Image (cartoon, rainbow, N blue to C red; front, side):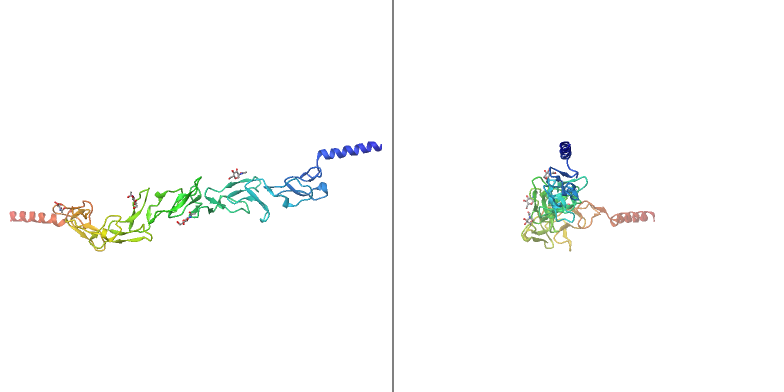
Length: 320
Ligand SMILES: *[C@@H]1O[C@H](CO)[C@@H](O)[C@H](O)[C@H]1NC(C)=O
Ligand SMILES: *[C@@H]1O[C@H](CO)[C@@H](O)[C@H](O)[C@H]1NC(C)=O
Ligand SMILES: *[C@@H]1O[C@H](CO)[C@@H](O)[C@H](O)[C@H]1NC(C)=O
Ligand SMILES: *[C@@H]1O[C@H](CO)[C@@H](O)[C@H](O)[C@H]1NC(C)=O
């Protein structure tokens, strides 16, 4: 009988070992907490193994362990942050997502050109706020939220191989970008009396007609109006570029309209500085205001009135 009892005991023991541990999270010959859990198993007179925080993992224990055993993260782009308010695996710097969610949200790389700080909570794309290129800004309102060049710069920090944001040519400016941009974005001029020649190869701001200066110089030389009665070609850099309006046909200079030559009253066109006329006189009896650039000549009331009055006088004379 003793032998039979012994055999039954051994058989039960073997069965227990084969069937595993009572604690569902315990495993191994010692029935310690298995991979993905921590604590002291009920098999070892403990309160039972607990699952690691979501997103994190532990190795098979060989004794009693604490939550600190849950060091590895399932998502390779996350890190176990034991100092976070809720210790768990959160996305690394440069990534956003939520490895701790019931259905984990994979840590995804921030849009190209942007960065996030290491997360201490679940995070969204909104965490990707910083820009790698210091001359770019993260525009979350752009059609494709990403880091784009600041006003006054052009480039593409979002490209697979980022194109550094480069300052616009001197004197020119660009609006803050909402997409990749090229030097062609540098269209506006800092000097309000300058114009951009808009050449995409070498866009540059030059003083407008009747002004002189150098908006591209370092420091910039402000565009100044030519003296009254004088004009200059676009891009004149010195006062010597200002020449007297020499158009013989009715050229005048309006006071307050510094430097610009305009056609006199009853003329229209664009005065030249070469002596050849750019102003054409209106037809007989027609008038046009000072500064007309197109043929806006009209018969005036007085020029019509005179022949009518003459005709009426003639009729009166004949009748009486
Ligand atoms: C981690 O990030 C890298 C690079 O962004 C990516 O290739 C990889 O698939 C990511 N790993 C996971 C598990 O998503
Ligand atoms: C940003 O622009 C400044 C001034 O144009 C320049 O000195 C600096 O190198 C730029 N930064 C980078 C990262 O290119
Ligand atoms: C624009 O200005 C720059 C600098 O003065 C010059 O090199 C370029 O040829 C100009 N382009 C055009 C189209 O005028
Ligand atoms: C002035 O205008 C008249 C008629 O419009 C023209 O015949 C004459 O050649 C012009 N004079 C000059 C100097 O251009």
